[in-house]
Amino acid sequence: MAKETMLKFTDVPRLMPEKRTATDRTEDFGEIYREFAEAKAAEQASRCSQCGVPFCQSHCPLHNNIPDWLKLTAEGRLQEAYEVSQATNTFPEICGRICPQDRLCEGNCVIEQSGHGTVTIGSVEKYITDTAWENGWVKAIKPPSERAESVGIIGAGPGGLAAADMLRRAGVQVTVYDRYDRAGGLMVYGIPGFKLEKDVTERRNRQLEDGGVEFELNCNVGEDISFNEIREKHDAVLIATGVYKSRDMGGPGAGLDGIVRAIDYLTASNKVNFGDSVPEFESGELNAEGRDVVVIGGGDTTMDCVRTAIRQGANSVKCLYRRDRANMPGSAREVENAIEEGVEFVWLSLPTAFHGEGSVSGVQVQQMRLGAPDATGRQAPEPIEGGDYVTDADMVIKALGFEPEDLPTLWGEPDLEVTRWGTIKADFRTHATNMDGVYAVGDIVRGASLVVWAIRDGREAAEAILERFNTAAATIAAE
Ligand code: FAD
Ligand code: SF4
Ligand code: SF4
Image (cartoon, rainbow, N blue to C red):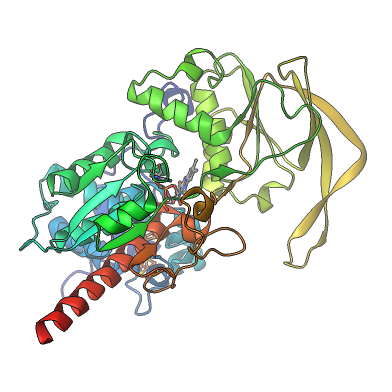
């Protein structure tokens, strides 16, 4: 009988790729996990029990065929594994790095449920595609024939780029407009290099450009070109602009210098790491070096801010969050990484005021406890009487989440339908908006979400746009 390659989860323990030591990794902005060696990737993939009903797959937003590419990896058939993996995911090496796997594929792996530790799906996915790039298996975009139709995509984040990739492969003429000077959206200017090194995204941008996707960068739609002009230039338009309006907090002292928004702070840091000159960084306004930093919030953006501040050489970094660790929305893995790197988490702490003369020098903190569950079942934080103190801080970063910009007003398009939260209303399958030929995907529809969901939306919208073009072409041919 042939030797079984898979189902090794009882013999082979779960292993993540080696993590750089905290001292080593806080010296730079490089990724913290090293690559699996080939034998390790095969060994870890062989732990999969090849479920008949794979919950990992049903909980992956892209429904990646995980059991198949794990088996192919375990058998050393990496090129085939790559073919299967890229069939459902435009950027597998990016998702392998930054998906919150503990909440998606890995969190639903049956091996995890049975106490053996999940298959390390994300790391294997990253390994397969990085290997494919190294070996030249990643195919250039070469449409079989050119089509006359063109699509204007507003926003070069993962949603816009996933759609651009599919449309261009089908021969559609694609122009991507973005107000930033680089393509990639939050993958480039939000997410720091220690989670996603920039050349990983740049490589994809080059692939799209080489494949004929036109990029109009430094082009702010609504200012440099109107939305209506874009509609007139193209046969269909895709809005993929993300959400960038930072939630704010008021209170005494909220206007003091030294209190900054997370998106400005992270964008500046990412630009500096590209070698760009950033005056607000050079002046110290957006540089944590030597400062006592307090970051307010509990999500993934907060984790990225605290860990960036550590790498910039902050004197101390505290994270204030009004609930406890168990109720923090940020990834548990990232909290662990941040603690290892020297971040102090001050749970159940609500900032109520900022102190200082001109510049911030301290934050007034109200200690909280978790009270009775609210309507959603989540325990509401409530103040502890007398639990009030001041913590020193000469830099405060607000990471309280993001909301959509008011696109109908900014673009002078009052007919573009939005929800009561300001996100664009779009069909959940086709992503069509109420405007003919206008589609919308990613965070601007979902609210702040994940790269993997933006990729899914972008792929689905591309399919719907192609269907629209094909139907129109068939109608003309029949006339
Ligand atoms: P975006 O990536 O935001 O891209 C939108 C693009 O549109 C931008 O390039 C913007 O410049 C452009 N744009 C906006 N308005 C205009 C205009 N008027 N004219 C021209 N261009 C315009 N997700 C994960 O899965 N894992 C993570 O680890 C993770 N970490 C994150 C960390 C941070 C700090 C942040 C802020 C988000 C993080 N996310 C993470 C969320 C993820 O980045 C987003 O969900 C995802 O990028 C959304 O993709 P998108 O294409 O909808 O929009
Ligand atoms: Fe898991 Fe994300 Fe990859 Fe899906 S895309 S398999 S959720 S890491
Ligand atoms: Fe393999 Fe886990 Fe997916 Fe089952 S749920 S197919 S064991 S990765």
